[in-house]
Image 1 (cartoon, rainbow, N blue to C red):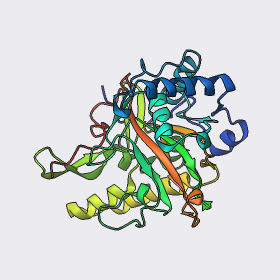
Image 2: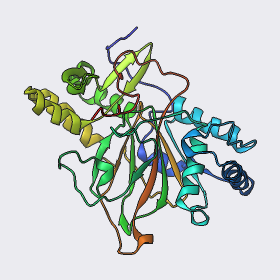
Image 3: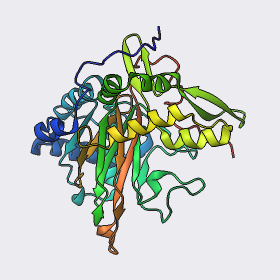
Length: 329
């Protein structure tokens, strides 16, 4: 049953940036034996020549690290909403080997789903030499600042292979904490988020249609959130239905809160870090970055979009969180 009456949200997902900066309970360093397990699992995959996209959890056995990964999944899925696994020695591996390890770790978190219309299951986040606000360009292809947003999946896993020469800091914010703040400050401005904004949605036929999609939705007592302002603004233009003054005021307030020191957590992911974010409670963003001329100074992240094996009660508000359909073109 879906209920749109705003109520304060309690629980571990309602954190603030300063609290997370101080306690760093979200940081999960790998131990030496756990790294050895990853290397043994990698060796098994290579010795049996198992293709990347066919690797299962049964192929990538982690007797000691595996149960810990499931505990981290609990934190990400049901409590805090994010974690960072630290210490994968990426400098020892080729990119292909790192992809195998990330994929293997991902099997403990969920099912991998498509990240783009090409059906790619392994994503490469780097500067493609393009910029935002260009046709068919998405944020991960640019070095530009990325607004806080959520991806079209349950869980995003981002592995840092190389840092930029300058910038590229990861930013996270609790959407449930922001929900509570808006409820406290301006409860009238929560209404547009529950009512939803127009999105242009592609149908299987290739046609598009406008659909009103909520940014906050309460189902069976569970609040789920989404933030895709770029898509909201582009859809309003395509639909010919401009955002109202109240809708813009609501979006501006959310942006202001998300970017404030009160709520934002900023982190500098190190090579070998793997960040996990639950898109139903966390919005993520990034500062702009500058690459150096040398290859080792060029920022590279590997990315997985994952579907939880245990479904979240979301009603029909998150109908497009199964990844991006493959284009028929």
